[in-house]
Length: 166
Image 1 (cartoon, rainbow, N blue to C red):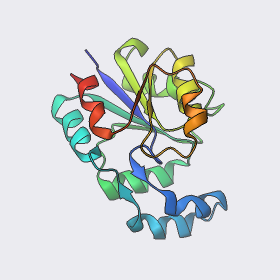
Image 2: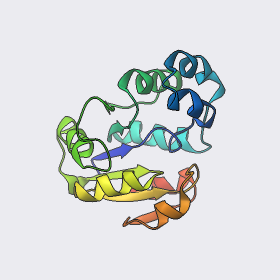
Image 3: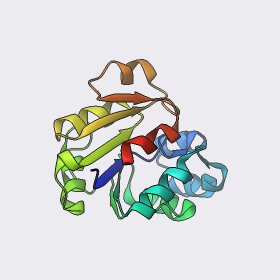
Image 4: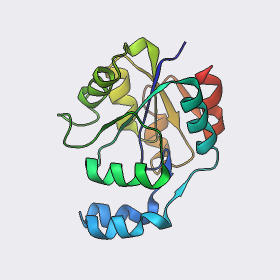
């Protein structure tokens, strides 16, 4: 039985494409201003509701700074119990340190946790931490790189997450 899940944020839970330029330029004021123009992917809310209802622990592990992650989590009321942002664990993804930090915060073993992400670095970090890695294809901007990494499963729709949470 799954006791915890780890999600990447950008392009996994929320389509933040509109924020990419501001993020690259580290113009956080502009990125925050644009958050209302982002969107949660169809099906993600149902997944989050299920996670919450089942009492599954949830962490977000992102390469973005914590204040950015916290603003998006707050805006969408994502029920994340824990956040591991850019400054919270080093080295950053693809190193397993952020995933190991999430396991520590959740107080769970790697074999009881699933990781979902849209980038190769998400898969590499999860696998190196001993966590089952699921490639999320709906938002990825690096599909061929993602599919070229070692992952456990690839899914095309957020609702395909639900069977993993049973």
